[in-house]
Image 1 (tube, one colour):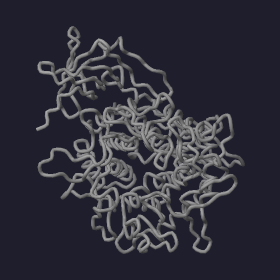
Image 2: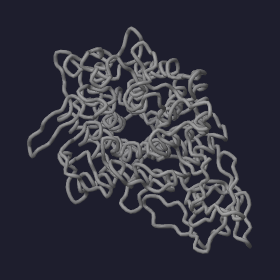
Image 3: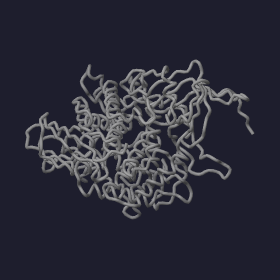
Length: 612
């Protein structure tokens, strides 16, 4: 047996059980009930969690008064493994709030302020705004840690669309015109440079991206990404719609709706498997055939996966339904949810869902990097989105699966000692193994924390199980304590298990194939919605700027997400700063006046119930 007795630094996340102020000792109970004895060192310092737009908040001189029973803290320190000295010697502490029941991330404007800050950073990094005009010719996929451009000349469709999503979300929450300008210009740039309209087939597909050299553009139809090389992966087509559709919610631009409808036609005609159900993950770039032998190069022939089935809902489809109320989009959402509920659970073999399949839904456990592995964030994403769709079309099956995932994941996918959620884990373990094995590392990615926060927020807001509140608070507290980059702006891609930022390779970047102002802003937008409207009982203002006669029958739909029926009402509307009364409080719709110019609409949404 290995006896590790070297000096070791670590992080403990836990709730204070008792504090002996005279001896400067306290005990912490972790999320899963383990107790650690801790000692304050003479050099200990403490801070209060600060938001992206705030200065350092020192609370070292308050440590004694803040170590109250029940207070969640993050204690970083050193374990010397010395006999007779079992205390964990604490060097620094992060307090998520000043009192046991108060968490800073539950302040009414916390997430809106963070959203504004993150979006502003990307405006500065990508366009040097406000010193220069917003021009997507200057957009680059790769951004360094401080936002500098690396010199690459690749513009990926998906990452531009994700940036557009962030800008549109920032406008929804703030009404600040610079964000809408960026969203609309980005949407137009995508349409003009990244979209192909097939006039013969009357459908649209999106290029992987373009390589820019001066005034020359080289369009790339098939993916340049290793896993999907020389194919058209469905997730790229899906995320091409994410930003434009969030923008459509604001403006009602009919060109966006037309693009979405014709892209969905592409999905139905070439990606959908009408024999076995679901959607294929890849098609041949020349023949559009999902069964083409050319897809064997990436082991993608006749395959289905989480992205091809499950990513429709969060990326664009829920927002498309919110903006239109069309039954066909509701039916599409239900189809994806039913497919997930039927095909993805794998209780006989693993607590994690199965994510990759052959055409006939047999499990594919040999594909590329995934093999027989589970992505924590995908499991949580299923729980989150099943609850959203359940609010639209109630299903006992959706709720049961969401609750099973929510109940299972903390023990197998979260770090119960330090806080936060892991990345990729082996789906099975050997008989003599206590833990499911981490695949590459014990680092924690920003987007996986997002899935945990949103899943447990909506689970608590809908079902009122206090255990879900606990998990949402722990996940959000860890994220806000360690992922915010207070030096250069934005959020870090990854942190180590102990919360320290990991700044090597592509994980050092603020812009990449994987990161582009999407998950960080989606988290902010929906956390503001779920916390204020479902949990803390605060009203929320959203902003829209519909084009003249853009929405059908001039009906603007202002529901922020698919929430439990009756929990939120539209209580006030202003148009161009003036009170306006022609709205339906329960349906959360506004009958817009006939106008020849875009109207600025401020909608105040008010919860009917408060949980905390």
